Length: 280
Image (cartoon, rainbow, N blue to C red; front, side, top):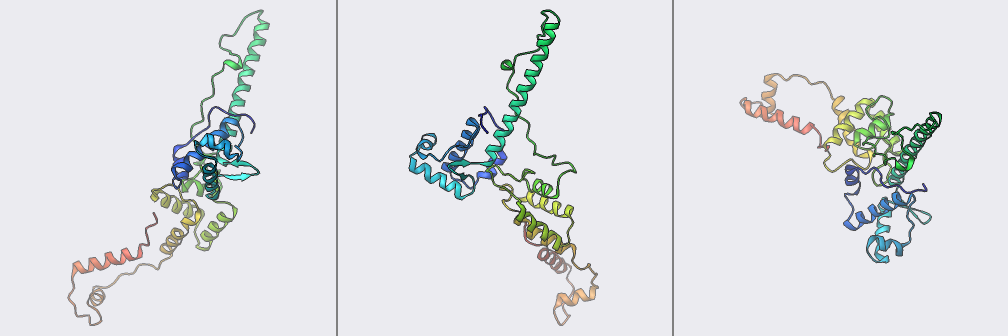
């Protein structure tokens, strides 16, 4: 990156889920670093005296907040540059869009100019010089890949089902489902005898139940996969004769009278006891 851009795509849901554990000071510092990255086209440096003026605090406080963000993985130091991967990515996207719009406008203007010369002074009122072209509108929200299409890899389908971007890059620049983490998830799926589609369905169902945003690791879904596999491979349900149920109900002596209400309570308790823990 070298040139700043006037805007970047900013998704509220991504920001809220990626910064919910941050303090007010840490959020303010992080969004300032994101803004500096996009406005200048390059990551800000760890110059705490200068950053303190941006943050509105003392240099010591600026350093403390930045160190906290580094420890939580929201940013990291590359030399003396404070890197937020998502800010870099969105800035690069805006730079490409701006360059493309400029090239298209220049091509239209050049074509119009040639046509004007050929027509001895005729002009095309619809053509505008590049400097008069309006700024391109931000792209609507979409993942980097077609999350609804069949072309997604298994990893990308799992990420989308979990509520993340198909790239695995979160709002704070972290990467979900890296090579080692996804290999662990896929091994668990394979060990449990689940198909890829079954695993994606389990992930989607559990992610929908999670009220505080997408989980930060695929390990969140390991127990739900195990419970699903256990339910899938459970022994077949067999009928119980009324006399057997009466004996179970009355204890070892089998003398207790049959009570329909008690039978219902036993069945309900059994079902509740085998339903597994709440995944959400």
